[in-house]
Image (cartoon, helix red, strand yellow):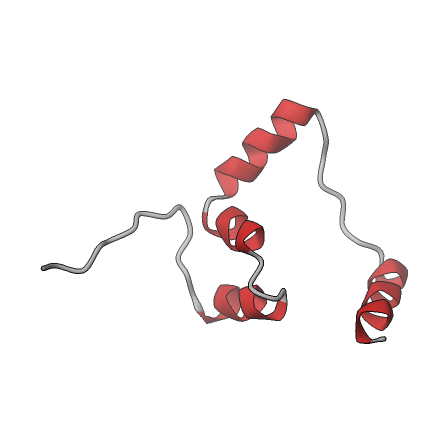
Length: 67
């Protein structure tokens, strides 16, 4: 029996794997990281754009998650 091969748009490297684990094994993160075109399709379908998270909100979110 041969090992299955998965064709992804992006390679699963150490950084992506580490981010997946850091995000409590969020399957959506991993899926969109490996297949960015699916994220672009969702953006187009719902007419939204991605924005970077401000450092203030990021720090507040991290503080909330720790508590």
